[in-house]
Length: 260
Image (cartoon, rainbow, N blue to C red; front, side, top):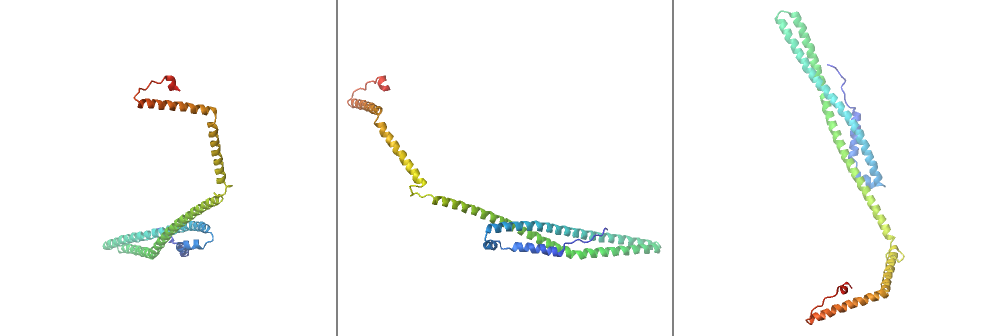
């Protein structure tokens, strides 16, 4: 068997990791934000602190888990070695009994001595395995606490990130609303010198121009002749309607008249 130094995490390091995780997990984020002069800067700092602490804790927990696995491996080897020395002791004892039965007491004693040595090795391996078992159990509990603490820290970080994003979004919304409010205040609909007043006056002038143009068109000579033609057409329509009512036949309208 290759004997190795038993590996284990430094208790002070474990306590430091657990203490730091516990402190961050118990931190009252809402209270910190409420007390901060600039909540957004506070959230940014908390996100950085949690991110850095999680990264450091993950490294430390990984080392702790690695040391625990080495201890478990050593324990398994001690248990296996104890079983192996037990088989060797039994084999040596059986050989000694066989030689003694054959009258070879000297060689039988040698094998009995070998059996005793094997039993001694077996007891040593058993003691080593038994000694480390409480440490392994304790380390497993520590690892579970560290894993749980890390998970809670990740949840806290997710909560902080969400709060920060929400605060940023609210800040941008408030800023946009403020800009709209300021823009609306700069426009006075009752002030004829405002943009709306000037636009309304421009529309009114354009409408007045159109009315003037219409009057001008109606007074033109061409427009007067068009009115006479419309009057002649209307007279022809009324004459035909009168003839129809008197029982007369409609006369065909010459193509030239239709075209007019």
